[in-house]
Every structure is written in structure tokens, then in C-alpha cells.
Image (cartoon, rainbow, N blue to C red; front, side):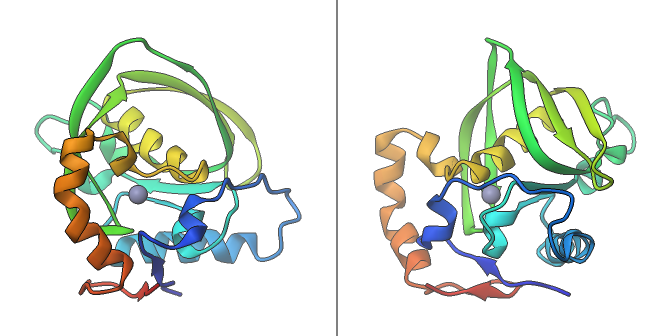
Length: 186
Ligand code: ZN
């Protein structure tokens, strides 16, 4: 089932999410719905707060970003469910590149992200895994991980850029926006 995506301005995007247990009711269905919702919206990552749930779940499928000729980051195979993730290490080095967010439609800004990191998480079978991620994979997970902490990528841009976006952001917060995918207007 495709779920509506909550937009910038909704309080659910600003709350810290909580860990879940194996017994979380409707877990399998929720994961399947999150993937379906993400594909419909043509995103490569989706965090549970974006569908209105303050729980620590992220789904990612970066295969649409893969360059068949030169897929150095192996994005083609980067499809994951992250339950209760914890970033346990990040590099000192950062790289700046453009990002967007399904909860903040039509806005793209350059953001600094750590070049590599280590993440511990449970997968869809509640097996505990540790993974070291580099480049585009590390970038995607940092964006989604921030959602679980109530943070958005526009929090990381300069005050001047932010000021320039104010009008657009308040339009989104008021629901004055058209999207190709279902949304929850504030
Ligand atoms: Zn986002």
C-alpha cells in the first residue's frame, strides 16, 4: 500500500524516533509499504517519520542512482532495511553534494556529509549487522538517519541559503505544493 508522505512543517518530522522490538505489530507490512511508497515517489531512501511514525526504521534502494558503466559505490546492490540503526563511527573528512527530500519537494541544496561511516543495525529479519559505508551510500544513510533524530537536510545549509528558501519552505508547510505522490498536508 502506498502511504502518504508527511511534509516539512509537520511535527512528526521534528521528533526523535524510538527503537522497536521484533514484536512490533505489522512490521512486515510496514516495510513492504515503505518500499512501495518510496518507489512511487521515486526516492532512494525513506525514514519512518516521513510516513508519520516516530520509530527507528529506514528503507533504502539506491539502484536507480547506479551508473551501469561506472558503479564504483555498488549502488546497484544497495537495497537495505535498517532497524534501530546506530552510527558508531564517522570519518573526519566531509564532502559537499546536492540533496533533496521527499518531505521537502522541489528543493535541492548542497550539504556536507561524512565520507565514510560504520553503522550497526538490525535487518528485516532482526539479524544484527555492522556495515562500513563509503561515498554515496554513506551520504544516503546520513540523510535518513537524521530523520530519525528529527533533523532535516535544510538544517545544515548556511543561514543565507536558508533565508533564500524561506518563501518556498513556508509554501510547503502550508501545503501549497503539487507532488507526483500522495502527501499529508499540514
Ligand atoms: Zn529526507
